[in-house]
Image 1 (tube, rainbow, N blue to C red):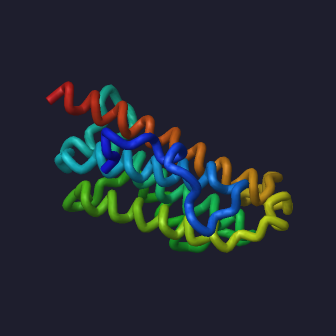
Image 2: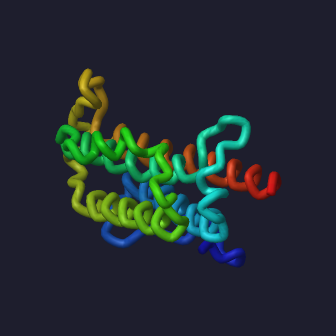
Length: 172
């Protein structure tokens, strides 16, 4: 949980063993993790999977943030998606039966952020501008472009998590 008396992660100093050029990615992911933990912890399964006004659920945004982080970091390694990654993508909006609870969603997101941080720690600076293809169409990017986009995309969905959670709690 983010401590109210602490500054945001990016203002707390460098993350050990991560290249200076990749510090913003690490800071962004750690900030996202703190916010996800704080926001979804108190939500019931019904709140997590509610779709106010037809909007995507909090649960979807948490799963999608984790899944897209996994997929974008896979592309950054120069790899294609696995069958499991494609199946996860197809199931991101599905609550499950019984619906997945906040603790399980938070744990899965945390595990993905930790995997991403391990990859950042082992990413050589010389590879940052190497070309990478994205998706089935192999759209052009670079290692750095994918890592930056992964952080930015994750934060975008965390913003949706925060907003949707407030709406759902307000409707209760």
